[in-house]
Amino acid sequence: MKNLQTGTLLAATLSTGLMAGLFAAFSYAVMPGLARSSDRTLIETMQTINMAILNPVFILPFLGSIPLLGLAVVLARRGEGRAALPWLTAALVLYVVAFLVTLVGNAPLNVQLADAGDPDDIKDLAAVRADFETKWIVWNIVRSLLHTAAFACLLWALIVYGAHRLHESGKANTSARPPATMTMTV
Image (tube, rainbow, N blue to C red; front, side, top):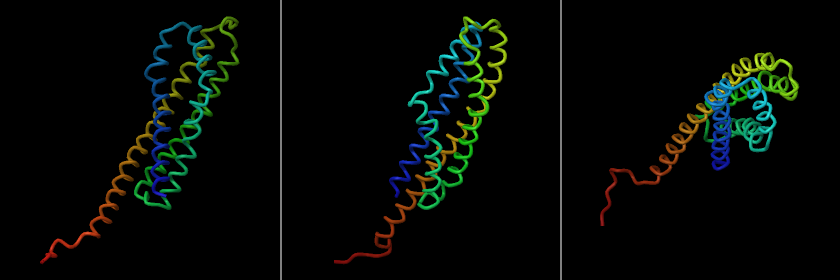
């Protein structure tokens, strides 16, 4: 049970951290870079990214974090990780809210941009960009902050969980030792 609990917590932390990093990178690098480009370049690049990102390397941590976090919460309630339970629960709630932000904020804008068609056929590139860019950036910042907060909660949960396990193993080791006042005579 301890190994499953530890492994689940580590996997949830890793997958959540990957998502926090991905969405944060869009906030501080990708979108500011595209903001300096032409309307056509931004539209074409985001259309291409939105198609390319739907792959197993993205989908596994993006969708996989939720069941991993749920399992981490369940295991903490049943096992030795009770001290980390509030942080795990907070991480799960934050991640689910971030996931919902993606579903109701960013994903519909991605579909809207795809539906605009090939940039060569769009009559008013500036209007399509204006209808997409600012809203998408705001939603992305929101999900970036939520994913990062979930990741921070998981990092703290790891510390709390590790300290608890260390404390418990220290108790087990000290109970096997003879009392300090006991003397040995030969």
